[in-house]
Length: 48
Image 1 (tube, rainbow, N blue to C red):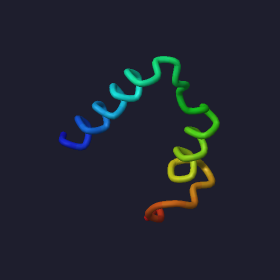
Image 2 (image 1 turned 90 degrees about the vertical axis):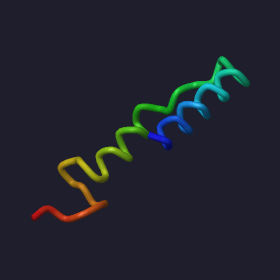
Image 3 (image 1 turned 120 degrees about the vertical axis):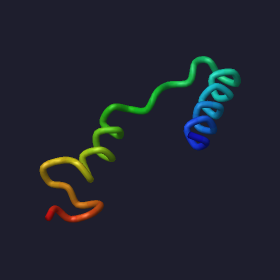
């Protein structure tokens, strides 16, 4: 819970500094998600 609060605070401060800040590119989000959870996953624990 503490980590979530810290991250939320950082997001709020970022928006206060620059309200025009862009979100992460969806292709970058997909890359990091799919490297562990995709069909060709190569990061994390191996499947049992």
